[in-house]
Image (cartoon, rainbow, N blue to C red; front, top):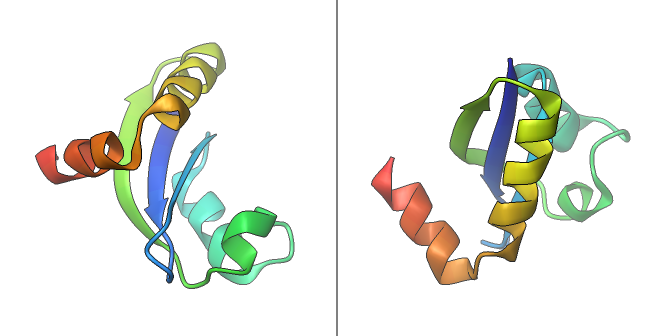
Length: 81
């Protein structure tokens, strides 16, 4: 199983990513040097949205779609869950 997610950072910005281990990735974003640089300087982050995907390709494709959304569209998606 793969996941596409949206994080809300401490400064209220949004970060979109994908992973095959959501718990581990969230831990990386909040605690480790291996987390994305964008989130490292905006900690703590919280998981605001998540979608399940069957394949890596599907997750990466959906991640690209979400990254093209405006902030308003991302917030609308978060609020629908």
